Amino acid sequence: MSTPTATSQYQQQYEEARLRGLDLDMTRGKPCADQLDLSAPLLAGVGAEYLARDGTDCRNYGCADGLADVKRLYASYLGVGIDEILMGDNSSLSLMHDVVAQALLRGVPGSDGPWAGTGARFLCPVPGYDRHFSICEHLGIEMITVPLGSEGPDLETVARLAGEDERIKGIFCVPRYSNPTGITYSDATVRGLASMETAAKDFRIIWDNAYAVHHLYPNPAPLTNILDECKRAGNSQRPLLFGSTSKITLAGAGLAMVGASEVNLADLRLFRSKQSIGPDKLSELSHLRFLPDLAAIENHMQNHADILRPKFEAVLMILDERLGPHGVATWTRPRGGYFISLETREGCASAVIDLAAQAGVRLTPAGATFPYGRDPKDTNIRLAPSYPSIEELREATGILALSILIVSEQKGFL
Ligand code: PLP
Image (cartoon, rainbow, N blue to C red; front, side, top):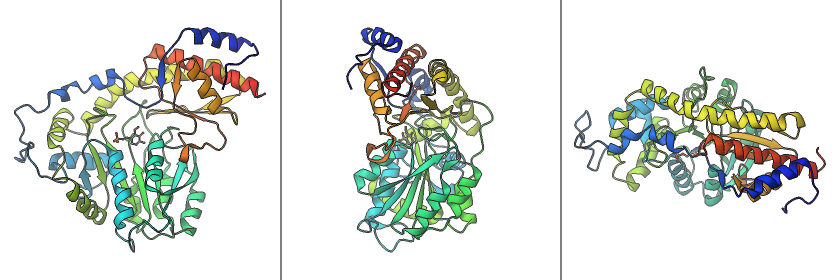
């Protein structure tokens, strides 16, 4: 889109901002350097103390599921039993990718055969996480969108679709502080997902609990345990739970994990054993020494919250001030996680993102929060406040607000 030609007060302010030649990046939910510094002790590694408590030499091959003490801690973190967890290396996304790829190649426990060639489809709550969608797109799984509300995906739609089409093999869920809207699934949603009838007998819930402990404020809403609920409903094989310390310790060098029923775990173990002779136990051991229990993780996350909260609040304050009175956008007020999700009026989001980019503010590409990059109403913009400084965020959000006002004016919404 070109720079606007008609002049309005917003355009003048925008022009002034544009001439400052800024370069601000709000595209991805990366931790900032101050957050990474909180985990500085990890950089020293384990030194010469490379034996785990049970005598395992962490320098060597072996321990395919991860160190026993590490599994114990992260099993309670995920809410599964000690025999229901497997530690990966640093990326939960890569575990999710492999689980889906393996299902296509071999099926999962309960399948009649590989998912490939069956027209496998996934339900994708929207707006959602772009990298979930790219896994499906890359592996040729058709995506069917379902609306994400304030309590999770619309259960009626999910249950109807999953109940009538056996090609629907699963759903991607970010149950706490969803990316990008920041909502946490209600108890009714978790129970509904766990107990609904599905046409596919090998239906899987990819339960990506990436933001399990990433609270910005005290007294977080509880999240019902999906594995317990699925077991209670007689669907123990349904959920695959993922987590990582990417946004607890070091985003590029944390620990990833998958939790599931023992039947699923045996299957995961089988393919993991073909991929690797064991995960990075030195990283596991240094993590364990740095964060030995759940209380230590919680304390550490408060330090993250102290860095992130003012950033979220700075963005929200500017949105409230500049856009509040005009009715041209709405936005979420997350209690945790990494994102704010903003809705423009229909048909405005991509033009807003282009206009902000021309003034040096990079935002997540339009459509990224929808499968195939297609936001049908062109309204959603994902804001990622973690990485820039507060000053940069104020500047960037001011330009975003001006861009929204200008585009809304041009389209007759103001
Ligand atoms: N899942 C969600 C919902 C995310 O937002 C992210 C990162 O932004 C990831 C997973 C990435 O996880 P990992 O670093 O463990 O691969």
